[in-house]
Length: 178
Image 1 (cartoon, rainbow, N blue to C red):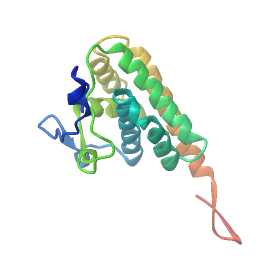
Image 2: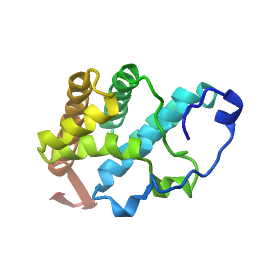
Image 3: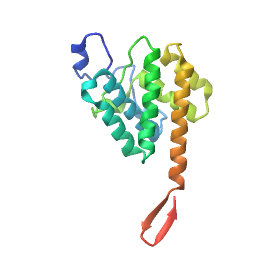
């Protein structure tokens, strides 16, 4: 999906799986990054079709995949990064429908650049992150976008660190550390 100028075209769901899209399994993104992708798609849908209230699904998806209080915090960080990104671009962004079982198996170039920016930040590859940010932001204010993505990566790292330290119970009498 994208945001063409004709609203009638925008409302139609079409499978735009083409040469510019790749299967999600051909990426090196981990489960966390794939979950962030799905949250991102719901926000894209909410921006283009506010009547869908898809932002609620973005927060619900985040809360389902990342425990409280991290779910809402992560969704908020994604939304901030997207707001900065959308404010810098002159052109729209292509994304796949987050509710379509066929579409969610593929990733557009814009989605790929967004998640790959996060991926490179998490891998401490500043050059790769910067390169993707420049492409996405069309050379405008990419440092603001990178700051927002760095905050998102920090929250994700805190989530994973906290999750590892949280005790869980296999049965009532035995306490184990994860």
